[in-house]
Image (cartoon, rainbow, N blue to C red):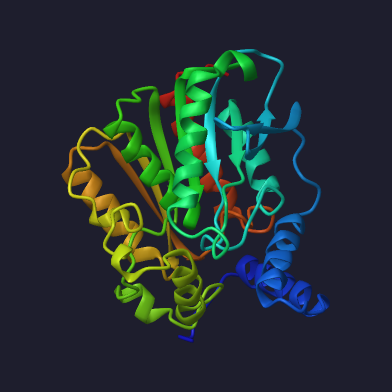
Length: 315
């Protein structure tokens, strides 16, 4: 790993994660061990921020997609964000990102619906994309049932969830779902090649390594013929014209830095209004560690400001 002068806050976050990893006995199934660890890491953020109301729900045509609905107040018909968690498409769930979803709910002053999409390898591509887009369509058609304003919608996600949010935004445009007004992409996965300068620079981490990430990605993309599919690698999409405004957040010490940057540049060239924020000194996952890292808090505030403006929320 390249020698990097991390800030005290980042080092403290690394140390806390290390202690948690060392405290968990391995399970018989390595993937289940990783899922359990990721869930525990998400919970190890101190006391979760209070929100007005939280409810688990099943949505979709067959009511098979679990979601968690976070409400910032008792106001009805608030705008809504569909949030997709990270985890390289193989780990992560409603629990791993509960703390982050709560922070976003309060920062954005709107309803956040966290989507528990199906994971690989049990459900490889395109299962996650199918669930995510079905969730968006369902919410747009059933706003009264869950008391949201489907005329003002946004998508957001971190890492693999950023990939899903980007793909869902493009599919919404392709299918004429014009209610989607914003996309917040937090260090998104946008490329399938693992060949960028930042992947070479940070192949051994921190937080995620090239070898482990490629292994996870191969579970998600079961067939190599799909590696050039823009629903797998959004940066390969030929037409990004007409997409909703976007915020793209990247970190200096994140292996995903350059592909996030490349996607932001491609959006800009397509005429999309993009706010690109490059956080100096930050590794992958820093937004999920907002309880310990001030830059994570700053990023959540930036997302909140942007989404409140895009969805015309007065607070």
